[in-house]
Image 1 (cartoon, rainbow over the protein chains, first blue to last red):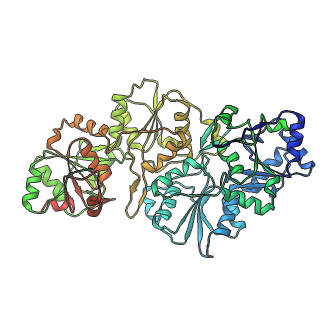
Image 2 (image 1 turned 90 degrees about the vertical axis):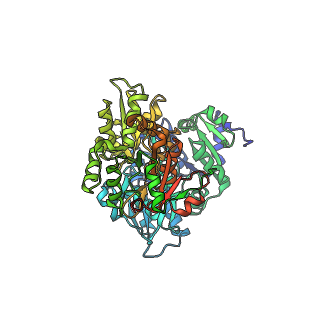
Image 3 (image 1 turned 180 degrees about the vertical axis):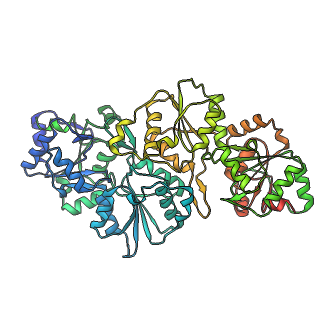
Length: 297
Length: 297
């Protein structure tokens, strides 16, 4: 039960005081900065202003399918201020975790269900991987015997994969089921994946096929876990008391900030409505605002 | 808690008395009759003998991916006695259920995740379908907007699908999520799918992606539900007291028999071991035998 009564940022004074309280802003992207590929009104100006004021701006996304380089192109195409180091995805967190917390040997590898984002970040950390787009070809029953246990697979890393198929499920299942020492890692557990008009099944839905089949519980590396925040704090050497997490979902973004003792700002342009915020018992933001663009006025 | 103490069929007298007690035998296939495409020792002779004795033999499988015609070819290739009417798959039960228990109009259809087995059986019942192998092509993010709610989709029917992909998950999710009147049906909930050497994820694992994403519970039409048995009893006009269910899994086959007040025989050539049978608290077979082939001696 949370005792916080979220404060709405309404007057210019509210907004100026709010901005002055922080050196760093962590932004969720979809539902905060854009919807699919449309920048929300006023957001471009707010981000440029924050940068001009010398604030550190970091984009934190649970989307692990794109590499940071691909993500950066999206920011540039949309005329949003960003460098590659301003982008922090769950794929970055996942690779960081494997490098620093998994005792992986040179001849061992990670089986990746997910897109190029995870693979590029693993490569940056010098970690070998298999699977991902190399397993995009559908499997036939005649090929089932090709899939065998492999003790060199140190972990299955599961992220959002638009090319998910039975070959990937069967391989991941086999590695996890045949070897209790094979780790089960996930970039995130978002149940839905936002598209232009509709919500589709997210990583948190897809991974349930493996959870149900193997009866194993994955270690989650993205929002809202402290794994991801610890990685951000360490990488950017941040002062938690001067850092604010901004997002549109209570159960990922706001919980992400609260779990790591950061101040939080909820924007109402995405998943969580004002009504849902008021009804939430466990997770409340410190501040809320109708949209990030409103911070400008 | 079951009070039954399973009786082992050991002596010739045991076996003769057992066979004489029944007119009809319902057989699970994998782990009872064959492993993948190898007939278990002695089973061919037992089946031919039962047929010669005038017993009704029905093959009951939760595998919905193949049509009965395709399944029949497997029996013929393996020199096992069968006609098309002796084969009863969860796809048959599923189509029977849609025809008799779903008020489906002429311009409505079923969205199928699964193989040709389900589609052929729906066609036999005069029910329109979409999806299945028509959706085998992987989807790109650019194509996401092609998927839209469709009130003409009366139900999502989920079965084992070796060509499962994100297009199918997203379509099924969208129909279920956008329309509370769209029914959620499943051919079975077997967590694993037996292959030649290994267990792979089964329908009951794959469907968890949709259960988690939609927060909806499917209606199960295959073993061990009474839905499937009611359909068999009605179709073949069977006397339950003279019918025995034979299988290798407590939680599907034996529960299937018990749920419908049939006598049951567990064979130890598949999933359930003698130890697991003894340890089971809720589900016990009436009889057990080391292998179906042993019934011959």
